[in-house]
Length: 252
Image 1 (cartoon, one colour):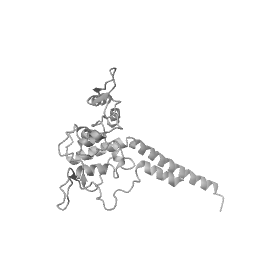
Image 2 (cartoon, rainbow, N blue to C red):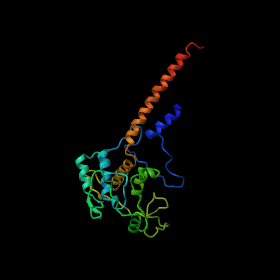
Image 3 (cartoon, rainbow, N blue to C red):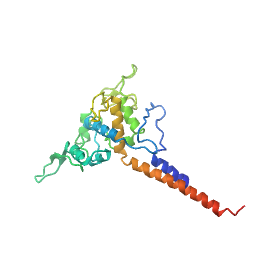
Image 4 (cartoon, rainbow, N blue to C red):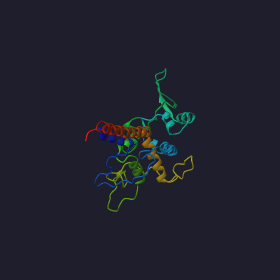
């Protein structure tokens, strides 16, 4: 029972992780993320940079339907900043008294608006490919943020003996190497407010961390709870040992 509880606690802390790369696949680079490990936490400055990459680059094709603007308060934005960020988006609302839909500035309670009206519109604009929602992508893909970072940095020239399919790009980390998404990032594409140098790798790292947060916003809380469970189990084990010695002290 104690071993089982310890395993649950380890999973809660992120100590135990699933296998990363399947046989025959290119192994993804493993980055040293601030949220890894027993005491891992999110770097708020990094998350804000990642949000800016999403906003200025990724949001033109990818939705994020499980995140509301008010959630941005958890990554370090104050109430006024959240309101300003939300107001920068136009939200379709309604119907009004005339039965018509209308546009209005976003509110903190709104979720991020989708870039396309529906799946067919998204496929029509992307050569038949359907850009996935990014809210939970870091948990839906094996490798999590490492996978996202690898894909964003994996665009290279195809080998001479490899044929890139029409309308596709070559990505050394994507299964099958043919990816529908054109290379989205390049050096200095996004200007970071904190002055961080905006290399392609930096942008990819920051947006991958941000998408890890969108997929698991309660990670820090889970780590704290897991740590408390481990402390409890250690104390409980000590009490059991002491009780055993006391009960059996007169038995030889």
